Image (spheres, rainbow, N blue to C red):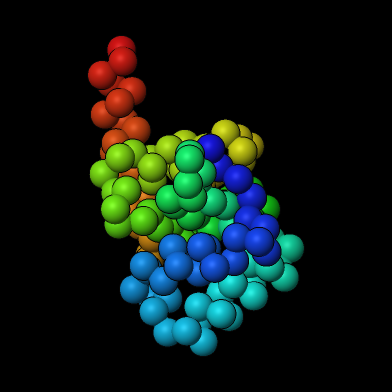
Length: 123
């Protein structure tokens, strides 16, 4: 289930963000967290089943939502969490197009492809 970020989840969110190569530097990571906490159009979501295992961060624009960050705990990868996060974003932002940045494009495409495969298997 996708839940909105709260300050109480800051450490786990920073841990998940730190798995992204461009967020390894502590100062950069702290600045990213500050942006999610203060900018009105930046929204951070966490994926929670029993534990928090994934994170996706977006920037909302007029008719587009751009995925800035997408990360899954390495011990929970290949379980469909990324695909489920993207699918949930599409439900939350039904009226907007969801796109990746250049930096999140490969992860986004993997999630999209998994979603397409699952859809074709069901039909």
